[in-house]
Image (cartoon, rainbow, N blue to C red; front, side, top):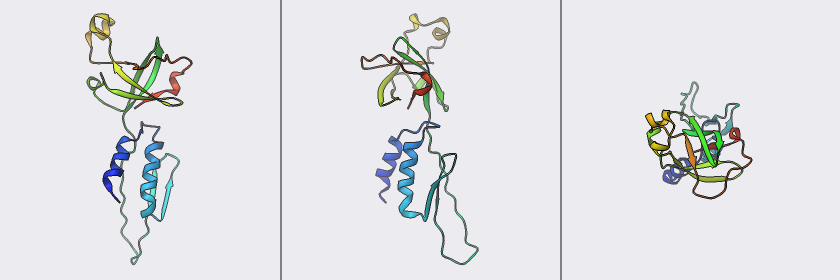
Length: 153
């Protein structure tokens, strides 16, 4: 197995907590040639089993890793802006100017921004490092979207 292409696929896959299906599919595919059994449990964990051939009792080894990543969930849609909250922990200061993918029927690109300090509400003016909205590089207002069905990576 060439590990570099696999790591590239895994790191480019979208896998916000609760929506890890893209990453899960890659992990299952990568484990298949090396395992006697690959399954997914009810929580979405991928379990691969390789049975040993030596005398009993055989040692057992478990490899564990996270499949999910930090992300954002849309909490409000207002005048073409998507307001969001955290999914996972990260430093808010790194968000401004970050490109994101908004997952709806198709994946839509966006850019996180913040209002200029002089245009912000008093609370935001005191804490300008906390962006909570996203604007688009394309001209297509999100009509008819429900915030509960939209998330971003």
